[in-house]
Length: 396
Figure (cartoon, rainbow, N blue to C red):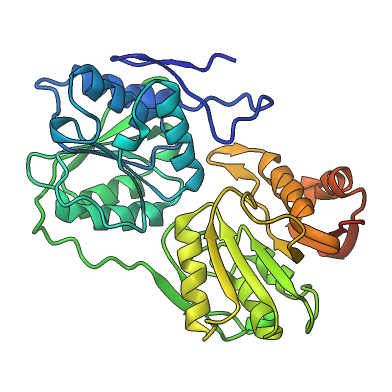
């Protein structure tokens, strides 16, 4: 596969993270290319502090760091400042790897998360439109005070990712907005800031609500969701089904809520078995912040731990008794089982002999086949017309 991305300033070697030779997907698409060509053609060229939001695998950040370096400005300072803001640990690590692979100083490019305070002044704001409209809303609210009337604001995405509601958010929170013509099924969003003091309403995130009465162990309990977390405004039906088929305590030991989202599953375990030690882990900074807030809202401050990372990397082997998960099957817009497969392999490594992985998934995904390949066994715990709950045991 061609992993060379030709930009107006340099040809770059780019890859996704973690790098998988079986992955045929590129680390950029036509919308990244369109935005970079638009910037290169601008007269006068945009200068000053550049902030890149929602960069999926670091293509935009790496290209702009190469631009700054080629212009003789250090990527981390002065007129060439390039700062990335992401809610994804994998994006952050991909960006680090891609900067290094192209001879750029990864330490000179600030890589902020959506939980960090944003820069105080932004001269060029570039937004890769996220899948989540809520995350876009939250980020525009957080960044708008740093914009000034001369800030260049440009969003990018594939045509299928940009909707009337997307444009309405830019218009309401940032200022007058128009779109470009489509090129190779990609489109630009071009916005003129109304200024930092413009009326834009309050940021509604994070959102807090009480769980429904059929949510088993956590019925009526509060949950806190930061923007961008899966099913942030309601309990999704897969988790609702999973909650009714969790292992019974007490004596669960050390439990991992893998891909924890808002932490509802791990919270249910911690409430049902006060003696359990629960690790909440996710690659999303927004998700782990939500899980931590949900635990606090339910008075859980003792045997709980929170970690942002790539699956179970960094979690000691043979350290868990139970891993619980509702694995994602999308990587941005691509449908793939690669994430679930890596999660299952990680679970097998961290489980003690006799330890159990229990998951919920859509029936059509065929997770029982993958579990048998990884663990050598898989058992159906429960099913309904849409979902299955499966368990696999690490044999000694």
